[in-house]
Image (cartoon, rainbow, N blue to C red; front, side, top):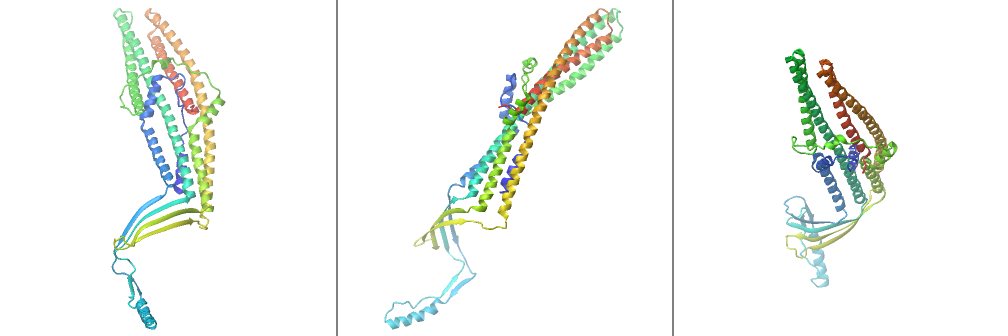
Amino acid sequence: MKLIHRYIHYLALLLPMSAVAQSAPSGQSAILENYIREGLSNNLALRQESLEISRVTESLNQARSLFYPRVAFNPTYSLAAGGRRLEFPVGDMLNPAYKALNQLTGTDRFPTNIENVNQLLAPNNFHDTKLSVQYAIFNTDIQYNFLIQKQLLSAQEARRRVVENELRYNIATAYYQYVQSLDAIRIFENSRHILSELARLNEKLVSNNVATKETVTSARYEVSKIDQQLAVAGKNRETARAYFNFLLNRDLAQRIDVDSSLTKILPEPKENLTDLQQTALRSRQELTQLNGSINAAQTAVKLNEANAKIPNVFVGANTGFQGFGYTFKNQAYVVAQLGLQWDLFRGYEKRSKVQQAKVQTDALQTRLTEVQRQIQLQVLQAYYDLNAATESLGATESGMRNAEQTLRVIDSKYRNGQSLLIEFLRYQNDQQTAQLQHSLARMDVLIKRAALDRAVAVQ
């Protein structure tokens, strides 16, 4: 019973506060969904959970096997020398009496050659070759242990779905981060192209004595800064690629297909917060897992109560051969048994076990209430995070358009000698920053959408 209590407690502690929708969110990339399916098939953490389910399933099979009769073949053969002896002068006592009776009756009906008993207590050249059968007619331990194992299996299966849902979210987030790293490289490369063109333009202006030499060196310095940023962006891309492939249990450098439509996905309409919270309370697998643990704890209470009040009844039989020497002649025997086991008093141990199981159940019920409140809080946070990210996306999109229009105007002015180099560099940097912010904001919306789906766990 201690092992069962510990296992119930272990399952209750394995509740990560996260889950994600089983199906792809509306608007999610088909390419990404294929990667998610691949990850669910190959991820090592998920395989470990599957192996744990197999282990608990075998525990259930072992509990089921106790309902069947136990049949065992138990041959034994003994050799002995020395030791204690059983000595009884039965011959000295009976032979004279029997002799007198024969004389009185004039017959030989009574034996007069009975030997005294002088037998080793440890039998020598003795065998007991038997087949034993035992069957529990009524055993509360077997019945309730089987129910507990079924409930623990249900909890473990829910635990696997929790890990699966978390993996879905992690794969989606890693994919968005990889796509964003590619977008950052594209932005930096565009900026480098603009600055390289600026450097060439300045070289022509210098050669025509329209500009001074520092305009060329300044433009080249800006190009070198972009090269540094490109190096960092390239490192981020490879890191994001490696992490994504790690989640899918693939080669870390394997190519990743990119869905260009991700940059065109618009935020979905807002759902009602209360409805999302109620959906989460119905769908979150953490609650299913915890309910399985609670059911197992409640069954453990019933088991201990039954142990304190109800006896166990069993039947059995032994049949085989028993005697000195392996002759099997006149050595057959059969023994049938009907047994009852009922512990009437064990120092209040059973009452303490019942109380212990009830305390465990109450603790899990309290944990369930806490998890429900945590889920509601998580949905609320994810809901407002998505709203904020959506509003931020609109602001960055407006800022990016304004920065691009301003740069076009400054570029025209600079080419016509109506603007300074420092102005061009400033507005070019503003455009690059606005593009990066917009790219981050768009991917942030997708990540926050995935986080809300994880919190709600729509089936």
